[in-house]
Image 1 (cartoon, rainbow, N blue to C red):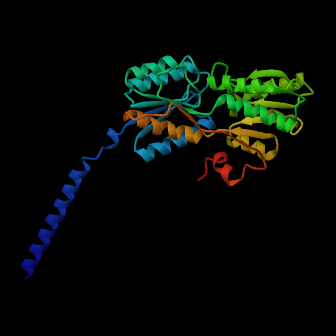
Image 2 (image 1 turned 30 degrees about the horizontal axis):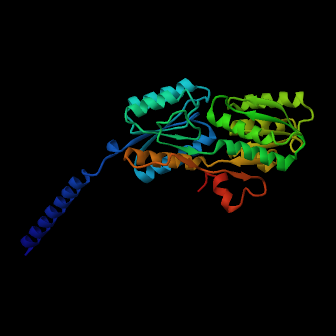
Length: 326
């Protein structure tokens, strides 16, 4: 009887081990991490708060669709050559697709088209690119963003005022288009006088110094319109330092933690905010569609929301304003 029991146990062990081996063989048919599709997400400046939220969206899509997402960007938004090099490295590294936030409308076009020539589809996010060979563009209507900045200014300050405009990067499509939207709208109001039109090259410290100069040169300044996060933070820091909160109103763009802090303190009057998470998420999602030869929308508008101290904590705005929380 004992011998029979030992035999049954031995048989059970053999069957169990065989099942494990069969299951192991079955798992080998599933693509491993090394065989996953690779998507390179290349932005204008890798450590900027705005692009950190883009990264969150891209990585969320990567997990959802089981693709490897590599995030890259130069240290400085002015480093266009560095961004071109990153695109070329993605091509030589045989990535399956590229998601690109181009730092220059014209200069990145050639690099993107080299990728297309190697059958690597390119999805453009945030800032348009001068090429008809990209698969699609995902981002804000930047002219509309500029218009909303100007319209918000008029509502908060009035139709008779002296203002300054703090732009970020001449030659970057998003910057140029927002500037156009601001001035197209302000030109409807003859008693709104723009006394200074500045560029900070997406550098908060430059925006800070330019703001202090504009204040010294124009003692009757009523407001400053800022067209991106770095310009908004630099201007707010200068206004706060000079103790001019409320006297000189700031209308900014984007929703970085620093900007939100200045809204809470009353230094920034209002923000026109984008949806960078969706830019990253849809960029990767549509890149996967392009890899699989599925159709991709040519234009996807991720929308704009105007927030201030009164509405920033409303449920419909909270996820846009605080994307770093679950």
